[in-house]
Image (cartoon, rainbow, N blue to C red; front, side, top):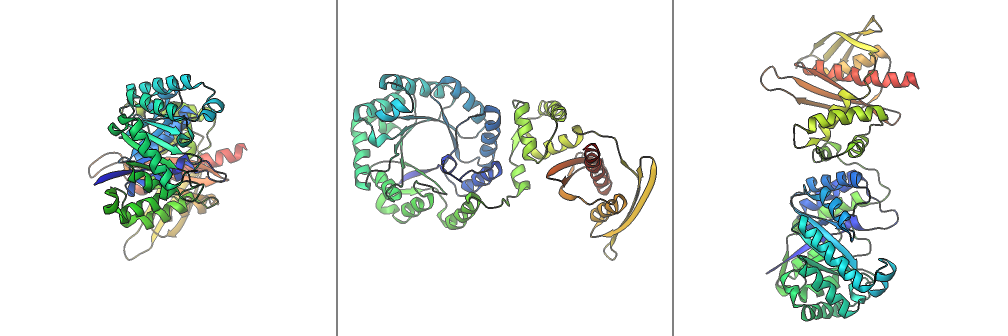
Length: 466
């Protein structure tokens, strides 16, 4: 029974109104991983520092899938792309080139001989860094037979482990594509040593039928999209292969029992115009930075958390990040939150904690009595709340006369044992901006109060300045 690999191209699709956010791409990657999709294809790199964070985060979100990223036909692109991809558990570099004479001349501005040389050199450069290299021939079905054969042979000779042939125009019937694949095996016997993939346009509404026909002729990888926009549907291809596995002598690793539910979730994530409801906590656990990331990548991650920092504060955060990144392999977004809270926007304390008394139990409501110092003058308040933290925060609001949206509340131990220190990060939102404060104490409530006041002082200071 032949194992058919499914290569998802959802994020590679380029259509009007289809523009996934950073968080949506992470969520999509997680869902594809749950579905056991073999390969997840990503867009290429246009901004090295920004895109490297995207690629690393997706690789962390889908560790069991091959993460495939295309390169341009030059060694510099290969080096930059692999630098972003190298931490993936299963990295793959894709050498994408057209093999039709029209596209070679008008899109790549090369002569056929120069294109063959560029394909060979780029595949070799990729193989020197990454053991898994794929050659993707776009518009392959409209190529001159001799050039297509030469391009495939060159790519395989230089080390490509997968060759994907694309019917970009979508002009072939299923039987024609089947004959086309059979012909390639005859003309290029070396193809039997590698994985042969196909990519089918849905211009004639027959993408899935063409993909299945290609499998019948020996293709073992299918490019499809979980959210298809002009190509084969991952769900349809997987269902067809699963239903006709005996006749095809093939099977897929995609979890067809969970297919309907997960595809519905993917459709919701990818649907244009909807409001994002992605679990930030879940996303944050998979996104990370390393000591190799520069200030721009750190600044991007900080902005993803909702902060709008000045150039000076960004420099302070980056300096603190470098110290921590030098001591550990990865720095997650929760840790970056704490770095921002402790390093950025250090302002004079409008409100300072003096004393607090919390009473709570299973038979009484939680009550907080808090005394603050405002510019050296005492002020206090009492509030009954739904739990100790809620009562404390509500008491502070009563004292200050200010109510701001509590965007996030995080608590984690920073030492071990019965007298463990607890670190709390509080994020307040006002006017579309996020203000973060950090508090440390052996008392959870005390840490929370200090974190809240830290964020509040930053917010009040900026409002006064403005």
